[in-house]
Length: 327
Picture 1 (tube, rainbow, N blue to C red):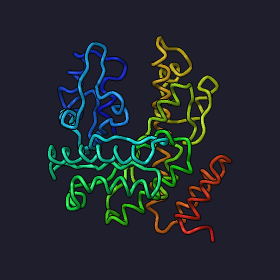
Picture 2 (picture 1 turned 45 degrees about the vertical axis):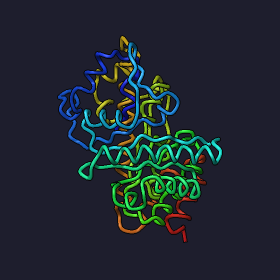
Picture 3 (picture 1 turned 90 degrees about the vertical axis):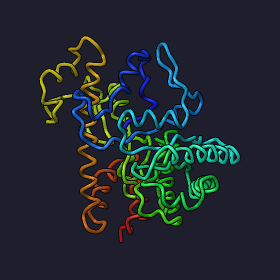
Picture 4 (picture 1 turned 45 degrees about the horizontal axis):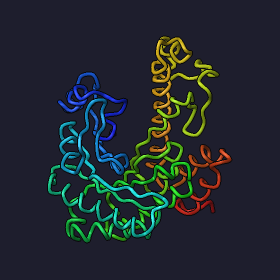
């Protein structure tokens, strides 16, 4: 998963930008990538300034420009350009953002086809807000198009809530309820931009896929993850206690210990270790979800989250409200 908005990170030049979009990602040997490419539109970043800003150029952004870039990068899952909401938005502002998003959705459908995998973005923190957002989309594109044109839903605007597990649980569980009431219960639900520590909780209440940059931000802050929920300062780590691909590589271990010319070489290795830890934990979550009944998932949540004091109330809520309870 990547985002159009990230193309000009780090102040790249126009020449580098043109190189980035000159060929599909999958065709570039440097990536050795053969998976599914989910390309977010970058609406959260473009809300204030609708441009891609490089070191010596700007690219104006609208729905047509976003689809063109998504195509040039070879995206498999495409997402419309949206207008995310903020927690302090009043009702008229939220409705206006929903209407503007709906106008983009209308154009997005005209620019793409049923041969594409298309996700509709929704925004809201509870049932009422999400229902209102979807209603505004329906007003613009029509009920038939809402129900036949999309292959999935992406729930956004959660970045400001990334550290509030209770509100994240409400947003995702209410989104699942809204989708069910609208007849979309079979559509996969992707959660945009969350903290990795929330993944098990949100998977338990109906989220199917996620994107999270927590592994990078942890590394930037000098944190070496030991689980989705715990980390320690990289300078205090005993790397022999981890057998991941990074910690088993002598050169990368030396870099993480500080033997690197640039800070990015040290923290890049830490970020990769953190990503491996995240992916391994997600495999365990997937295994628990795919097991018959809810017992395996309840056991996972209890053993992982239930032992973390800051997460206990959220773990108990998920088990009691979404997984049939303890008794």
